[in-house]
Amino acid sequence: MTTATPPPTTTPTTPLLPATDIPDARPTPARIAFREEVRALLRSPAVQEEVDGIRRFPPGREPGLLTTYRLLGERGWLAPSWPKRYGGAGLGHYDSAVVTEEMILAGVPDDAHVLSVDIVGRFVLDSGTDAQRERLLPPLARGERIATVLFTEPQAGSDLGRMTTRAEPDGEGAWRLYGTKVFNQKSGFADTALCAAITVPGTMPGIGLFLLPLRSPGVTIRTLPNLTDDAFCEISIDGVRLTREDVVGEVDDGWRLMNELLLLERTGIDFHAKIRHWLDSVADAVPERLRERYAALDARLAAGHALAWRMVTELDAGRTDPVLAAMAKWYVTEQAREVARFCLELRGRDGLLTNQDPDAPDLGRIERALRYAPTLTLASGTSEVMLRAIATSHLELL
Image 1 (cartoon, rainbow, N blue to C red):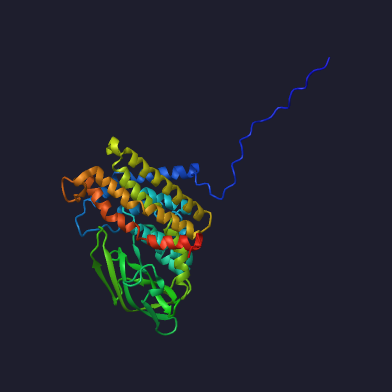
Image 2 (cartoon, rainbow, N blue to C red):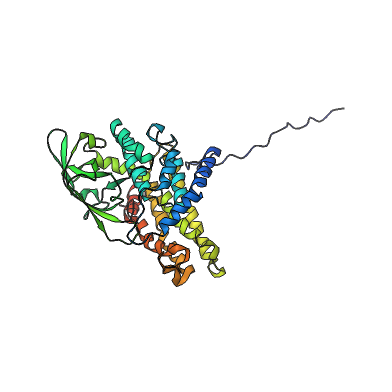
């Protein structure tokens, strides 16, 4: 009599996923816990009281240094990706993006934070000297000081080749700066500005990045009218003398540094959070007839969010992709005006009331969104510049 041999025992296996170059952006348990801690602080009564007070500011008044910044700074969270010796938490780009996103979703103004930490601080951290880092970074990370950026000029927005501000040699290892910068924010609160100036004239000029003390003799700050609640300034610089100690990186290497480091500003995370904040504010008031449009906007914002977090994950892995940055920035910000108009349609004419009107719904949030929406397509590089980068570097159309 023969006995049938049973088939070999096999262990079910999960089918292999197809290979992809898209990084895994799913947060680890530690990162989930970090987000929850940050969110708890930013939704606390103390922070929300400050946010509510800022939302009631009259025209002409804007926020500068916030108590909320100091609360974040005490924990190393205002600049979480910086080393602890400079006031950070020694984390990564991912964690910085979490803080930025949660700040905006909680209604905390982020302009001073972006300028001070994400731009000026990052330039100094990556390309500055040890002395510059020790002097500038700790007070920025603690939320005790603000720094700003002086790149844009009256006739030179995103086109650095048209810059006219110049740094003239003034003895060995010294320069005098002359020129005018425009559309700069938080200059009325800042102590220091990262100022771009031509050091070598030409078709492709050499550009230097200088740490300019804004309270120096020869610096004149004038406020310009604009649609937003945050003042734009015009800065006139007349012969301010700076030395090699004030130069970030190599003297003539500013063009490369700006092209590389400004990618960190174009993840789309901050822009997405602002637009999401607007749409979420009307989510409970969407009637049946508009639910399909609301769902479409919500889905497009979710897609933009995924694209932005892909960019953050690439940065966290040490990879920079200018085309992906342009895609994320363009796709997210182009949704701003449509979302703002949708919110106005829900609120009706009352949505046009400002925060100074007692009948304004939600303290005039929609009226403010309508004013800010067009600016998102201009900040950090215009939509046209982003499309050109995509067309030339990726699609090879130009």
